Image (cartoon, rainbow, N blue to C red; front, side, top):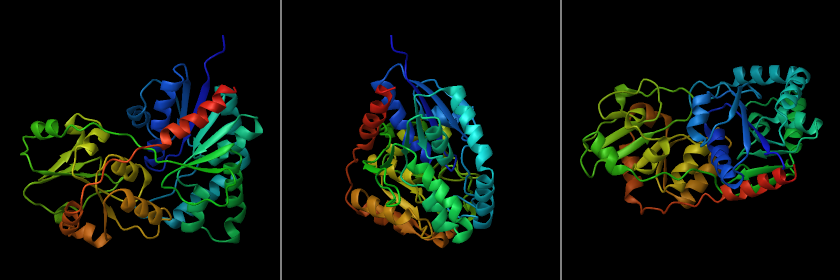
Length: 362
């Protein structure tokens, strides 16, 4: 009897967007290949990963790629990020040996990376097939936000060579264009679909019909809310998704709902967030309007916002509006627009088909 295939999932630890992309694919893979054995490597906490995966997995807490340094969920610390990335690159050869040992220990039939590039190098060296899955690549992000020309040229080329080492780079919509990657393959969006549990939410917190529920989700980067100026309105309730220091009048911690985030999101009237793949894709694929912070310096923003406007409802507010709480009018504009139907997350089945074809050859 042929042994069960072994998949190694390597996840970047910059926020939760990378996990949000690959977790629905893994869950669908388990349905297609029930005996699939999964090992997960990354710097995210195990419980965060377990919340999104449907079955048991082997976990190795290891940082496989550098993480951009952030002042907040949307403010990049450029000097600190340069130091972290350059130090990681200076230790490239030792890191490749580390990754080779990791692969030897786990003996995967396939590596799925979202999107640690060094491990893709190591997989190529050990003749292990690999698939990259992400709406961006860190070389493009670093070059746009932190790059200093010749000083970073060798590092960026090594990063791109890592991504090119994958057999295919699956880019779920909405993705950055990546003309520098010949193995780039566009696929549909990837997101979870939640259950509508609005009546349960209202009953749990003794809320009246007609109340507006707004999720505040700024990603996995610790960020506080300016509660002293936070807007209050009768009939408006904020649902805090892990934003630090966010308790007050009209503010409910999502943990107190007893529901998973995706069900809460699917049951609300809007989400307040910043440009990022995970929340955008989940909101649009569940028909939830988006109130987003302006983030003009982030390379993904133009593509994320254009996609969200095409398939959903989106309003943008400035950092000043966020800090002063002057954004209720923008919320009202969102709700004045016709509702948009949930978008199918077609990228899940597309990614599963590609990954399963590689595992079938193992």
